[in-house]
Image 1 (tube, helix red, strand yellow):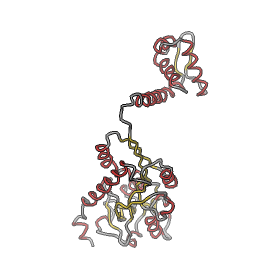
Image 2: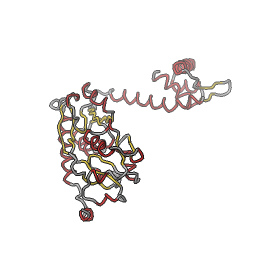
Image 3: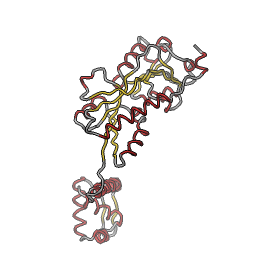
Image 4: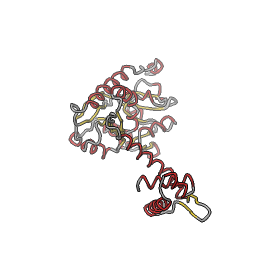
Length: 309
């Protein structure tokens, strides 16, 4: 498949006439016919129904129409980008993470990065655990944001801690625990639980979840594939969950209560080399400042919550 084939297809689709399409592209009608046949052979489907009186798109042709426009547009844009060698080159900066929740930290950081580097091209990668560190090893991402892995040997890079993140209990405001200033695991055992998938949760969270599950009935808890899914069920009143307090004030309204005795998690970034990467050095500085500022601006517990203890 090439851009001339796509141009021929789109010209015929727009005019529904092979002769007019040939005039539009300044080629012969047999050339148009040949390109359409070649494209149909490659796609293994008929794109047009043609009789002596009409030309019309087949159902497959209609489905392919938007794809053809997108592919041709991307191709033209890529070609134009490099036609003028004096134009500034894009600065690709690739950020990897495990969950969309972590991506929500980035808008203000990327805004400041764009002010420093007008030609930055952020590439955001949300990848399962087992693949993300491979991308770092192969230098397909510049930096990974997330919680420190218990086994540092499996991560091919440098870890820099940005903050200690406490573990909190999240529940709807209708839950009896919502007014507490803190909560213990024993107090949580009497509640229905919304639990994250162990393979996608920090090890400290997984250990606490195991303590809560104990020998309880499967009817007492729900497993979710992501923290975002867990928050939906929590807000709907299905139960409570435990998550790192990663600035949940930016999420839909739920009560968040510190969990007594839970060790905070180390949150930071993994990278391979910062000295030769000015974008990475700036990103580390800006993200550190952002997290420090957010922690300083955290809203303290309400007076009503303190009364209940």
